[in-house]
Image (cartoon, rainbow, N blue to C red; front, side, top):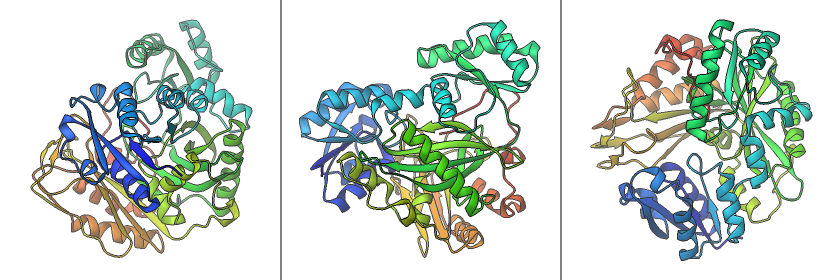
Length: 456
């Protein structure tokens, strides 16, 4: 087992990794930007190193600074959390070269699944259901028009190296395709240094369902069930739950087995998530795989009782999974609400000082946060300040538990999305499980453009 782990992240996820390490008896190193000097992850880590100015490009995305911090402190592994460098094959390769263990998949797998066109081909070969689309990048208007005609409108243009919604456009008629293709290519080039894009069928109002997997280096791989992530604003997840209402045990076993086989086909190790769109007929279509820990991993932990972060660490250290698929059980229902420092009506960021912060606990309630009274919410980073996760015997109890927790939450000094989350869980369609990625249009109509945002 590792003696010391450096956490290449900040905020609640850095604290989450610190908690797992403490329970495993592992020392931790926090890295921080100048803006985060007084943050809780710095306070609770055993050691800390400042790695640069507030801008993430100069600090949390600075690979040389992170590697130097690991070498100076003698860390024998790096946990990247989620976001920032968590899906960086480059960081994983540099760790390997420096004899530091990267707590995540092999860099070759990160590269494969990070290239969405290659990932589509690999998953198709493994027998995973796919939406119709191009076999690879489309590099001309003629090819794009032919592909779109064959697939049938509407279609979506996606950046091969996509993320954050950049390089993505929905096309509803042939006349718009040439201009949107060029726009997507330019945006992809500017964002990722690669202008390649591909085309696939665009589903109207699907459900977003993802499966959590864990695999060790000894050939053992299991799934930990699914999460419903359909409540999104411009494809930014707001609320997640497990299990997903429309899935029966039979469908769960079938899809879980399919995901495990697909992950084995690409020699996947550590934690990962295979994401799908589900149409109104209950058919699944592969969307992408995230080669990292997800923001919403706690809902899976609540229904399975498995600490995913600890398992990540054990796997990276070379240990075998401590359980078989037949030993994974699912109990009750869990819901997670992301609390963002945003205006709940306009979604404008609301950085500043929190003057009062109180989120009640109680049976079945878990709060993952690095926020506290008199802390400063920086404008430099993601607006999420807390995750409220609840667990109940069934979905109805989980909803009731979430409602009372949100109603009793006090956050003063900044605006937050707590009122919006209360609207969501009080909605009759939400209570009935009638969900789709268009659910949020009733609260915040989508802007009339074709740009999509991150699904991570």
